[in-house]
Image 1: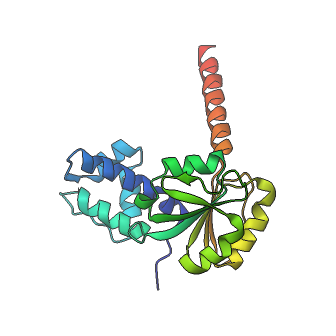
Image 2: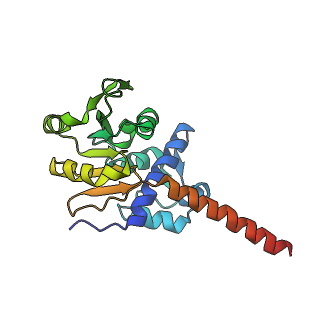
Length: 216
């Protein structure tokens, strides 16, 4: 039976991958959990507990082989799978996502972009032509993408996701401002940039209040 891994551990895996990649680029060959904890702001015991969920990978008195651990975490995350993905909604947000996201380094290959705006259809973004959303079913039947990036207006999100699910899409990265509630056999990541801004605003305000209290 496959071991159940908590959501909090899964959320930390991309951070481990990113930091280990930076260490590799700097020529670091091995690192202890204590040294890694100092860089990441996570306790050494938490790092060991997280990695032990997948086998540990470290050696007492030696630490972690950076290149090996980097590769192992890439495998755990499925970054070598090259799942096919499409983008639905080629507005400003969608175009920015295509221009600035290295899908290939994150386990996906972007194979199609779709929109309903006649002025956008036919244009290219990073070598991928924007296609008419009317043809999306035929494209999915042919290419069989696994994931769809959603950046449509929130008013049509539910309908778009429902139709794509019926067409066989099993994963969604949602950048619209409407929450997607997944079915049992569908996985979803809802990305809310506005929520992050509001959390940051709160932290700044709280820090200012704490400073004022200390000055009294």
